[in-house]
Length: 447
Picture 1: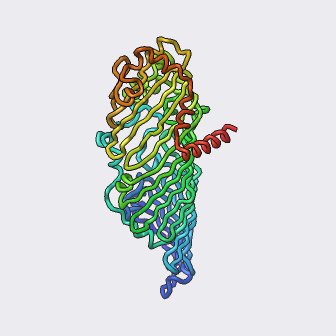
Picture 2: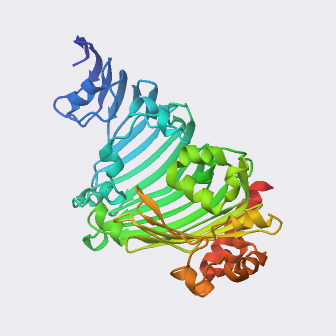
């Protein structure tokens, strides 16, 4: 066969081939070009369920088959593209080498749209009740994995996409990936993602040692903290973070239950827009913020000076110990507690301390201890001890009396120690060393 040109409905095909029917593996040449208005038709022809929204496509494949099968591929889906080379050798088992890239990937067009970060939920599409009721564990299937393919192939992949459109607001990101599959071990030696909110580099490994899949992840980067979603000045509102996680299991649910690891974050200050906090955060976050920070009703913003967080992961639970600490111009705040990833139950204790010079009336308006319970989807304030008897861990600190009673507030407020420094000193030696590395990275960024 030399050439085939034709149309099948809206699908146009142009094929140019040189084949030796007596020996297909010798000096074969195939060039295939296909285009059409519906990518669903393209997937249907290949027997694959549609992976993307239905968009127009153009596909070009050029294959040269000598000792190895190698060729180039070029694919356009709507405003997204994919190009590069693929080489396959079959001696001593299949080996695949792919060098791919994209000039642009429009996730907003390819997939169902999601609201941009920081968008007012009332202006975006309504979330279904089923989605609202889903827990973290619901996204981790208990269906056993079939990872036998890890031992059947060897492969290498290089991919780069310098421009990824992530949402309707046309926010941009960039992705690069280098991965290798060899001897039953899939490794992403280099995985980077950069957008306006986060700059991540990670190393990921998946292996099937002893027939049980094992996953390990190391991650480093910088990000704008979640409260950056609430507006305000963002010049210094950046956290450096690092973490490491490992898990084993025959399913995603099994790995979630087995996962162990740690996560650290620290950074400089920034400014929170108090009004936008109430708009984006909803009733519970707004109420909590007003209880621990009485200035939200009189000031338009809250200036932060530092933030730091340390968390560990084990037995399906995130432990915020020593916890999280924030310092603003007027308040110090620390958070300790747990989040159960399996049933999403929360148990967080929030402690607030006024800084000197804020005035007696403002100090009396503080809620020094608040406990947050419930679940991620339905959090609730369990304990508000302003003017009431303190319970639990707070009672140990105050002898069971109100923190505002008997002048205890005066002694509580008299401490001027930096909560960020306090939390760092309470960390383990290993975490203190990791935090110093993050501090050096932050300083290098500022320099």
